[in-house]
Structure formats: structure tokens, C-alpha cells
Amino acid sequence: MRLPRVAEVRTQIAALPIPNAPWGDAIHHVTHIELVIVDVLTDTGIEGVGFTHTSGVGAAAIEALITDDVASFVAGREVSPRGLWHDTWHHLHDMGGGGVTTMALAALDIAYWDIVGKSVQLPLADLLGRCRDRVPVYRSGTNLDKPLDELLDQVEGWVAAGYRGVKVKVGRPDIEEDVERVTRVRALAGRLPLMVDANQGWDAGKAVRAIRALEGLDLAWVEEPLLSDDVAGHARLRERVAVPIALGENVYTPFQFAQYVAAGAVDYLQADVGRVGGITPFLDIAALARAWNLPMAPHFMVEISGQLLCSIPNAKVCEDLDGGSLSDLGVLAEPVPVQDGHLAPPASPGHGIVLDRDRLAAHRRTPTARSGG
Image 1: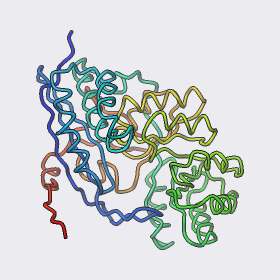
Image 2: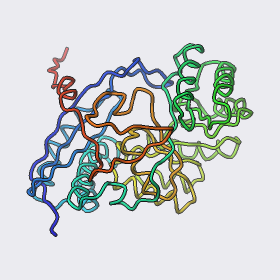
Image 3: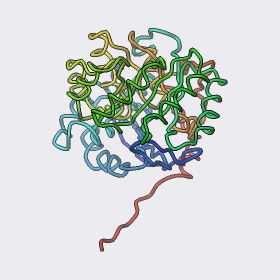
Image 4: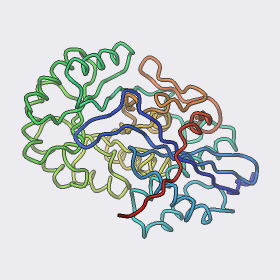
């Protein structure tokens, strides 16, 4: 059986309002999630669907890179995901090894793997090599700006829904306020795993003070305590505190993850499939983590990330960000539900994610003309 060839690449952007917006944390004020949707049509008639996301900024740049530079480069090529990914990444590398380039590649790569799964009539998890039938899911929220009573109501809802852990934001100006809020959340969460996320909001000294102040609350990890560019700083911090360090949602290439791992700077790797470039590099990062006996706990996009965790041995847990999943954004025509705190992959060939095209069309973003002053 020959592989299908790329016949056409189509794109669109949808700007989707976040339920209960805005999100607030140390670095974000977000009202919309932008989805860049890519449909890859092949000469055999099989179509693959891919997507990537932004926190409301940059989707037009991602779409332009795909339509202006990538679509013609991959036209007529066999849909062999690894080969296409590496050839295209080298083609784009002068624009940067990660960031807009890998976010554009992600949408294409997810579509390629969808095509291959449909071609051989296998669900994605089986195509990649299934290790388990479902993965545990924790719930998180971008809730640093919520008053304490609203935060507790949110967490209470997550616990009642059966999630296998909860994560809340930290980074208030007063460390003692963070301690009070997390202490109250711990009381609600009981023995469930509890994580906190600083969203790169601390400097080195405050990170040490804050994490030590939180150490008695049995945290599973503290996430992104420092700027994601600071590999050496995370390594020094990890030597000075007892709480494990998690990071990766703002790390874009396997090379950058390797620097973190080799420096002894991280305990949990949180690769975001939409930011690292798709399924192909996500699997490379998972293999790197496994070689160092580190678990994967990916960021965002639970409907696709959960499927990938079912196909890697070193899966830990998957994040379901309140208001940020494809389900919460209302763009799924067929459900990919979290049930009893777990996600099980769809049984249909490919990734099984069917998008609600009417919903996407209703929120389609069109270019806006801008004039200089």
C-alpha cells in the first residue's frame, strides 16, 4: 500500500471566547483562544484534520507561515509524518527553531498522523503503540485573580466531578496570601494530588521563599516558578527546595527539553503538543524523558494529549484546563469526554476528533486592516 500524497492544504482561524473569561495569572489576561485549523487533503481522498492554539495572540502569523511557505513545500509529498516534519522544520529553521515555526508545524503534523491512522484504519493510540486504555486527568484553572470564595467554589466543582488532581495559580504579591489560598484548597482536595503554577512570575529569591512557605502542603509539583528561558536558574532552584519542579508549556523544541533534563532542572515534563510541533516531536520528547526516568504530564489540549499519553510508557497525568479544552470551547461535533477523571481515546481511525464546522465558521477570524499613525 502506497502512502497518500498531499494534494491541498486549507487553513482557517477561529477566535473562541473562553467560558467565564477572562483568565488571569502572573502573565496572562486572556479572553479568547485562537485555534488555527488545518485540513490536509490527499490524492487518495483521505483528509486529515490538524490544529494548534494561541492564547489570543499570533494566529495570523501561524496561518501565514503555513499558507505562504509550507503548503507549496509539502505539495505532492508522501504523508510520512516524521520525514515531512523534519524536512519542513529545516525548511523553516531560519525563522527560528521553535515558537511560530513549531506551532505551525503542529497543526500539519497532527493532520498527517490523522491521515495515516485513517489510511490503515487504526485509532491514533493503536497506530503509535497503545500502552494503556485510558489516562488520569487533573483539572486546572487560570484563577490567580479570583477571590478566595470563587476559587474554592471552582475547586469544589472539580473534586465533585471526579478529577484525579487539581492545580491552582500562585503568584500573589504577598506570599502569605498564596499560602492561605493553597491551604484552603488543600483542605478541599483532601488526599488528591495538588499542584501549583507560578506562570514564570517569580524571581530566584522569591521563588525560594514562596516554595519553602508552601512545602508543608504536600504539593505534587510547582510549575514554571521562573522564566522558561532560565535553565540554569531552575537547576539552582531545584537544589534549594523540596517540592518537585514541573515545566514545559513554554519550551518549544526537543533540544531545549534536553538542556533542562541534562541540567537536572526538572521533575515533570509538560510538553504542549500544539507548541512543540505536533505528535512527532512530542514522541521524541517523551522518549528523552523516559531515558532519564522522568514522567510526562502534558499541558493543554486534553483531547489529543490524552491520546498520546495512552501510547507512551512514562505517562503520568494529563491537564484539563477549565474553559480551555476543545469540549469547553464548544468546537467538538462528537464528544471526547473526561469521565471519572480519565480520558479514553476515541475508537475511530485517526485521532477521532471531529470539529463542529458551524461553530468554527461562526467565530472565524478574518484579517483586519491596520493603518499606521
